[in-house]
Image (cartoon, rainbow, N blue to C red; front, side, top):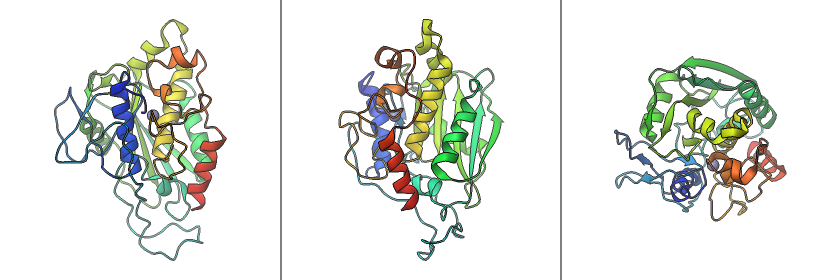
Length: 302
Ligand SMILES: [Zn+2]
């Protein structure tokens, strides 16, 4: 997310996500191309440009807007801070992008992480991408990470935020303190008709990766593996609260809320946009930078 639409649009989405992540007004991106207007959709984070329409009744995403972070529910008992044992209260409901940062990262919030990978036919993750994400999650959370691959039906379409959250809810297990679930959908088509968006995080636990748009962005460079590694890590970063979607460090790019100003960070806004090749070359960043890692450590120890 992050970017500004094709610039603007992307921003919307991105910002949306950001917004969402940051709490406050929950952005809801509705997709022009799709149908359902699901008020439950909170926000979308994506880079590239996605035009997000707002739903008056629900929180709508707005570009550039950032709100106060709203930490996820902690499990009810405030006495678990020093314990590594997960809280026994029910898992929190997924809200805006970034609000599950503590649920994913803190030992007392969940015991492990399940990386749910739901792929349409012909849209499976590139070689090594899932292993990379597992490594990232293990490193930043210190928790066991289990991969749960699943088949996702349907074909190429214009995915709206409600479409994505519905698919996630139908393909992933329920959230629990035993296993906090991160779901990545690998799909054909695009985000609400915007082909500049390579990936979009639309809820605290839900991201969609648009493989056809990745292939298009890779173009003649043929670096789709590098691009997918970058895009998926970027979206994972949003779900983990980066940048400033959970904390308020003030280091996010003001022009691209929720993103890093550092071109060397995978959280740079262009990573999820079709301008990734133009701005970052054939080898886009695929790792968090030191500031990102410091934020994740802060969240984890909070
Ligand atoms: Zn982003």
